[in-house]
Length: 310
Image 1: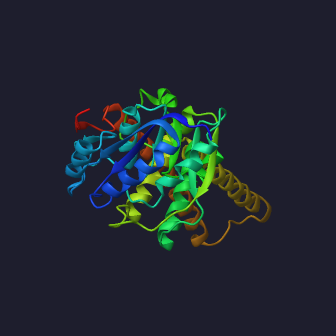
Image 2: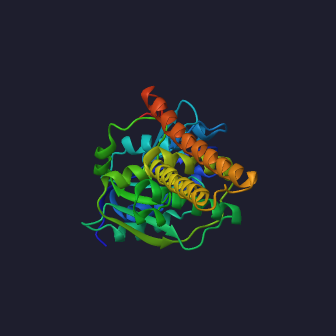
Image 3: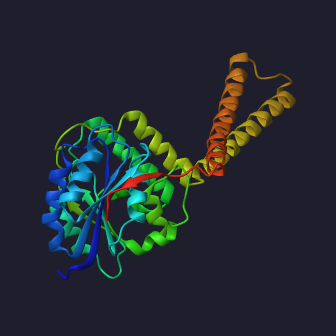
């Protein structure tokens, strides 16, 4: 395999003081085999433990390590966006801080990076998650597929290798709703995926709860795609057709038999269905209006507090 020119490993960090030293050690062993030049960029996403202190200690003792410290916890994807914009290598490698993806598998991603490919995902053969988390991950993949409208969502994972140059496609992107995978889908041309191992967490526990995963899925669907609005339009059209059919039936029966359709529950049920459909549609529109309002405030995706000395 021909080595890549240069790689910056971007790691979003949140309450990971116990894994950072091991992570940097494993990256330091894996990256020289795939790149001529490489460095490690640790982005502290408002950790409440000693993560930033550990990052500064690592940066002081390891010249290949750099650190960025955000003002507060903005989320995994805003931290990734920040790290991607500060990457100096020709390629960016992203991975989580929990060592569930092995840094040694970066060589497999590098082998799949050809002239026609811009993004390579490391897709786990079997996720080391509990059942509820596997179900939530499947829902997130479906939400991402709706957002980007491409099958690449089925293989997306936090373990990615992509060309740094494609960040030019979203250099002006701002706002509180960020998905790196959506931004890559906007800019990149060729995608590929390789199967990699997925380990249990090296230490600590996942910071994602069902509520956070559900909110992320909602942000993906309503923040980057008009499909829910189309669904609401189709839903409204469908119930309009049902209403017209019912009206024709009622009027026709009255003209033919001289009587109306008996039964108040039937009419009440129809009214409830139509009202529910209207409220559901208004709710979807409200989600979009809320996001338009948030973007009009020009709220930043992240705010950088400090960085380790270069």
